[in-house]
Image (tube, rainbow over all chains, first blue to last red):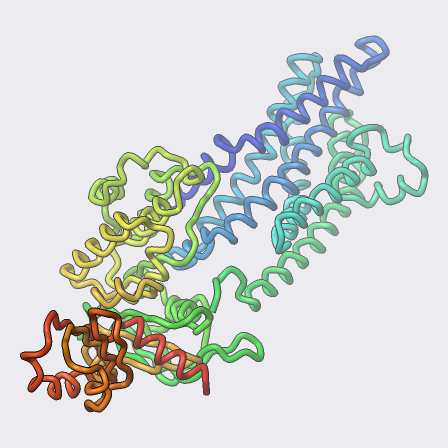
Length: 254
Length: 295
């Protein structure tokens, strides 16, 4: 237990408290977008805007999770492997289990922080009011919905070169955010692009959040979509991890 | 006493490329073994097999168990190539994490103090120099209080002062009975501390023994003196390979220093400022590995 606690403290400091990239790109930037699109670039009365304040909060939560996974987690896992932290821990008596458990814990925390920050802004600035059960189910959906997105981030971490990783993160994150309707309504996009967007994991999570926060009927096909993405990305990560082990990457020169 | 490391007919390949061909080795407790070889000779691969990071064919055991077995991991410390420059992490954080991995860990603060690294404790790893990082990595390897240490190119990037301090610490660890396997490109340093040298060339140990035994096999010496005798006289002496006159010095290169010196005894009253330099480990290493390359 002492090992796990130390690992948690170690990762909490480097992944959250001292990680300016995470704080800026995953929290401050979506928060900035939320304020920009709900307070500055607005048309309509406060009553008319209420549903938008809630739905855009949902979108920015999903966007924040997406950024954390595809930029934050992918790069952190890659660096930990390349710089020998994973090898160092694998040589210890406890192995890498406490490390992976701790990283998974902080991944969940990152998502909850996203909900906390966006939720606080929505409530504090825009007067959004949700019942306790809605907040609770929102947390639950974010925790489940983040899984396939995090797995995409873990999969990206196996890319060999940092430049390619950065390019891949950009090429996936922003198109995915746009086509799944996180930045502006999906019905503003061409039909063919909407068809693609409606298959994205971010779309499924966003839809579920919208349905819960607007008390609309929950469409379980969104949950099925999340499960399908979870299975596919999970298998992909297993294959990549096995491939990496076979190659014996990061073990240095002969 | 239990043998610390045992390897018999160990082989390892990366795909089609055979890196280790037939490695046989026994290391006893308290021994300091210097593992040397040219780049790509297989030193790091061998260490990685002993650590359980790679699996070779043949018999290998560390503390009587397969490499990587949990019980043996507790008794192992390693300082691999490259340092952990983990973003957002201080020296103190890393030491705490390393100490938490072992039930027999030393006090990280006391160890940093002993290594004169306490000032670096609050510093982020990313701002440290290469030499400082190497010293921190060494402290991290030691904080678990291991019985066996694998040190792979430990002094790369250290300045002369840090290297000196490092080898002094190695001597202290020897006094504590630690077993160590060290690879280094600084052969003059490794010959000072190693009880035994292993020279790895083309996947095999071309030498396994003490420096003295190695020098007995390689008797070459350079004899320098000043004399009024003709240099041609020295060409005819036994084991003389080459004679050079760099006035006022006469330099005699011998393939067997003792034999040539015996032949010089009758002329001693005509020789002045005589000095004898035996072949260094580096000379012998280059001979051994160069010879093999030519085959």
